[in-house]
Structures are given as C-alpha cells and as structure tokens.
Image (cartoon, rainbow, N blue to C red; front, top):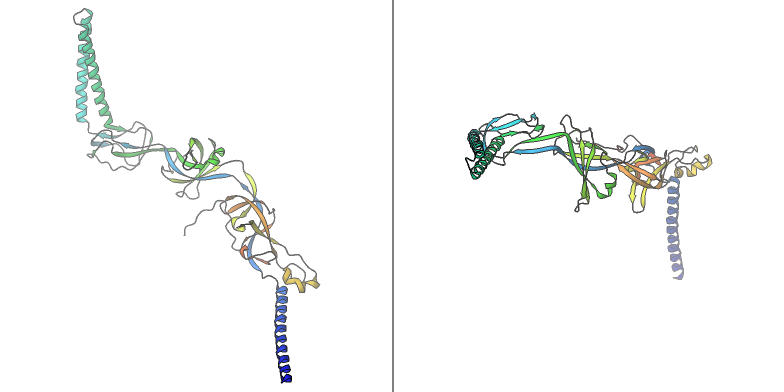
Length: 392
C-alpha cells in the first residue's frame, strides 16, 4: 500500500509540475511574441504646423433696423378718395400718398375763412371809429377777441383738411398696402409702412467685459443667410450709455451702407467687430487637440530613429523600422499644449508645438506614445477659418 501511494503521489506531482511548466512556457512565449511585434500601427491624418494671420474679432448676433421707419396711420377717420402710390414705391419727403374725402371739412373751412374775413373787417372798422371816440374800448376788445376765435377755428379746420391728405414724412420705400379707393379707415388704423434703409442700422449686444474693445467708428462686417458668401461693411455709430442689469450686456449700434436696398429692416444678421491689429499665430485644426482633466494635448508624428542592421531583426517592429535599418513609419509622441483663440475649425496654439512639427489631426484617440503611424491624408479634417454650413 505504501508503495502504491508513493507511486500515485509521484504521478500527481509530475502532472502538476508539467501543467505549471506549460503555463509558464506559454506566458513566456506570449510575452516574447508581443515584445517582438510591438504596438500595432494606426492610420491617421497629419499636417505641418504653420503660422496664419489672425484678425481678432468679436462676434455677435444683431437685428437690422431702418434709419427712419414708421407704420403710417390715419389720424382722422374717412373714406379713401384717391391713392397716389403703389406698393413698394420709392417716395420723397412731402409727397402725397393718400387722399381722403374732405368735401365736408373743406366746406366748413371755407365758412370759417369767411367768418374770419368778416371779423377782421368789423375789427378794422371799429378800430378806425375808436380813434374818433365813436366806439368804446370794450367794443374794440370784443371785436379783437372775436377775430382771434374765428382764426383759431379756421386753423383747426385747416389742420383737419391737411390730415386728410396723407404725405410721406421722409424719403424712403413703401411697403405692401391693401388699401383701395372707397375704403373707410378708422383713427389709428395702419395704412402702409415707410422705411428709409440707406444706410441701414444693426443693433447687437456684447458682454460688459468687451466694452473696452468697442469704439465709435470701429469696422464691422455683416453677414446674412439671405446673401450667402457675401459680407457688408459698416462701422459702429453709437454705444449705449448703460449696461443692461439683467444680461450684463451693452447695446451697440452700427451703420451699414445699403444703396441697393438689399438689406431689409427686421432681418437677422451675424456681426463681426474687428478689434486690435492683425497677428500671426501657430494654427491647427480643432480636431487635433484633445482636452482632458490634465490639460490639452496633441500627438506629433516623429520620425523613427534608425537602428543598426544587426539589431533590426530583434527590435524592428518595436521601433517601427525595417530590417535594412531605415525608418519604416513615424511614431506617435504625445505633448501638452496651451491653446488660445478659436475661429471656425481652427485653434491657435501658444506653446507646446513648433513651426514645422508634423501634427496628427485625426485618429489620435487610438494612439499612445510609440504607436507606429500610417499617414493617409486623402480626407483631412475641416480647417476653415470661417466655415459655411452646407445644406444637402
């Protein structure tokens, strides 16, 4: 029994030893294989870091407003007798637009003017008689008062008649009107819109921290989705005298020439105010920068260091070189950077990257230091300073 037990224990021990040895040998061979193959290559896009000219700008959203703009309304009620305009006409200041039926008011005015003429005759006659003491001072005063009352009534009726002849208060362009001859209009009813839009004004707001960068006469560029790809130049004409206590923004007014009348009051506009002098900054696509809790980083594509031919067979894949000793592909190197201003698809890099460095612009999420890189720039990321949305 003891001999059998010893043989069984020996067999079990040998089996365990063989199993442990096999596991250790497998782990050793796997580590050796991984060490020989190194990191798998990754396909990325790259670009050479270079300087570009930047014009510092403050962006905002504004609303266009006519320099002079009114909704013309009826001051008196009446029936439209004649229209002297068509929708969309350009009119001059003082030009007659709408004529209301004023026959009754004109007759009242004529009667008032006749009464004024009679009162004036009575007053002049009594004043001549007063000089020879034929009438009293009281009679003369009564005649003078009666003349003034008659003149005031005539002036009132003349004003009513004038209000029934509606004229343009300033030069501008009329809007669309649905008025027709014979139509009755009420007091306060909107008749037609009149807008003077050359130059046109744009109202926008900027945060209070940027007030110091604003000045009257500063250049402004205006864009609108109604005119894609076009910019309208203007300048700041006024800065509000107070800051809105609710938003902490200050209202800015800019003036833009609009000789063709293309820009219309009420339109939405993208406003860019140029501040400071142009500068040159090292510029990268925003996709090249990775932001995390430790800071901002980019990956550089560094050329692999060539190794001796005798060592290439052992370390070639690990270092990304061929057996001939020449570099086969660049290697990834992660560096920390400090970024600055942004515009469109671009970001300015203040430190961490030098001019001429080859920077990975996409595909860096799968990289780490030493990863061999396969560069494919057939589809580079967007790199526009002022990208335009495309609708398909």
